[in-house]
Length: 468
Image 1: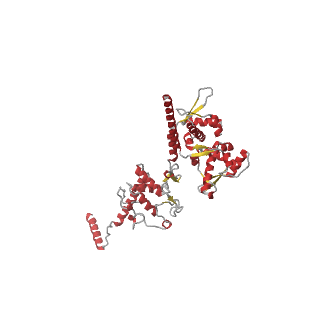
Image 2: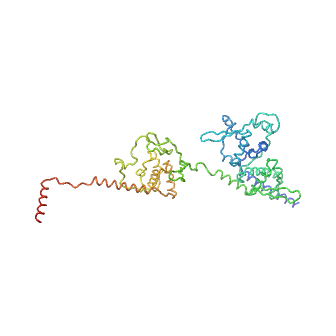
């Protein structure tokens, strides 16, 4: 009797460990599941199309309940289909063709930018189900018992299984195995190592897989390390399967994190796809900077697009009418006059006295001053911006200025045009100073007294005649 009690205690301990592993895997999977109807796979002849149709039915019902005015239309991108159903782009296209050909799924391209919208024709789906079952047609109703019977009991397809195996069919087979494990565990039909019976004939019938589909799905799962298989060594052997409950939850969590790690706010928007002088170079602006285009072009610079940051004060009157010089040191000076000193802009430099590019608009100058606040050398950034703008590499001055400051703070800023701009400014300043000296320096007075001139001329003649 003590031996029997020990065996029972050991068996209960094993069941508790397996049950805890199942709970951990369930918590990792979460609510990322789709209803897969085997009857729809038999109706359409494609398990992948049935998988797509199952989620489309769910979305159509949700939209009809919450937003009836949309008529059941919803839109999804290929990335979202991959996330909810595990289907690749090629599999989505194939499934769409199957469902569109049967008339079950409807699609429409709408919006700007255009998106692909979908809707399930529920009445046509009811017609196809009734024709396949050779029964009288009845309009679609979510509560109709006959239609529920024709649809049958769905299989819960867990999308993270498809992510980890990189195959929708492998994820579907893994979902059926996981459901079978939970059933056999409740009946104590799992051994100590976690092996349970998984006959392939039941999977072929239950999932409506072909033999090649099932073989490929099993190979994918074994190759990815999600499960193991072994066949009993006896006359009427059975195929045994074991789900890797210890390592699979961590793998599922890792796959889920990869799907949700990249946010849209961290991406860079390409405002200028290519540059004229450098065909492989892309001008990019941080996605966090919201840009707006008040006018397509500036009258004074027809080849430059007008753009300003959201925080910049901008008005069309400022653009179309002349405005005062941007620098206080230039007031009252000629067109070609420049400040007397070249400012290298140390960390404590006055941002008001910086030399800004001539092409910057008044509103952009105010925004540039805010961006350059805290920079160790803001003048070199402005010189680099001026050189890039002169060569036509910059369409969005504010966004490019933000990028230059970010690179300077990160220690990756390498000026290309700043030194050339500074040298040109020094040369123009030297020319200006020479012109000023010529205008300010007093000229030698010219003698106008006739008497003094005659005296000098007489002295000169006498000196010449005396020598002779």
